[in-house]
Length: 439
Ligand code: PLP
Image (cartoon, rainbow, N blue to C red; front, side, top):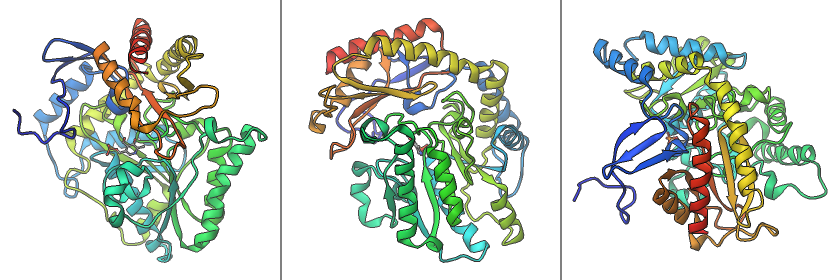
């Protein structure tokens, strides 16, 4: 018996002993094709030599230099490489330990910014229904996942939630895609006006909604409309690219595809690709200038901010992206995977929708394809599917839908960017058998 307090106290988990390319091998020798990188983390697979070597080298040179006392090369180069490719205006990077801390820090930075520029009354936040931004108290307050929130509800920050962009279920038949996008984006304006335009600090959204909505994409014009509304009322726009960013959608920054620049952009997961725990955020120059001419200090910071080894790993990940041309490989692989999924599951009686961008693909599972009726949440089809996929030797990332039936269970696929074409077939074959065994 182990003394670990596992997250799941009822099931015994396989013991992972080795990572080999896209595979995880457990202590019985069983191989799992990791088609989701856990929760969209391992974008380079599990044994990338360049990243492993960078980690080794950095530990040997200097393992820890407290970033409140020292700067270091890996952190500086990582900031340079990210800012050079980021939408214009995002001019600085700060590195934290993961995605929740990135959300938390962005929330705090928005507050600090408005204090610095003499608008202390701006302390309200808006985020979206059925969203997830992390598990610490501020991040949990931003999110709207009932299951994750309910235990802590009395402790959470006040929050206004508006509808997400979720065309599959929420576009009306009498509206075009563009009209739908405008209608849901305009919920932001209504919320700002209701709270009081000079009271709102920031609006948070994922450009492509990952774990909460199974890769629900923004319809054309939606993100731009959010930007327009934030600008109209002086509200900061924060894009959470923790899951969808870092090349996963076929662009290093997802929002770049839509030509929309946020004021703060959060990242994690693919940033360190699982080789080290690291997150971060990019900040717009106007915020940097406000801090520089104000208190001269970023008020957020944990001990491991900008950790040397984590930054070295993330830098090596970026270098691998460039040397191996992996972001364009994402686009090629994505076309192949989507075609295979559409062919195999496009008419599946229990797959209502296949969606997403790049290698960030969601399949929504339904009880009835015609009516889009979700499975009853008590059936926990998503969990059965995960277990069946494990039995087949496939790691995917299924999640339950909304308890009120506003979204169905879904499966998220987020395979590594350096996958072989033949492994696309393996994903689809194994997933097909797992669906057959569980639905
Ligand atoms: N934001 C989004 C969109 C996420 O998907 C997640 C994690 O799944 C987080 C934030 C939190 O990241 P972490 O689990 O690294 O704290």
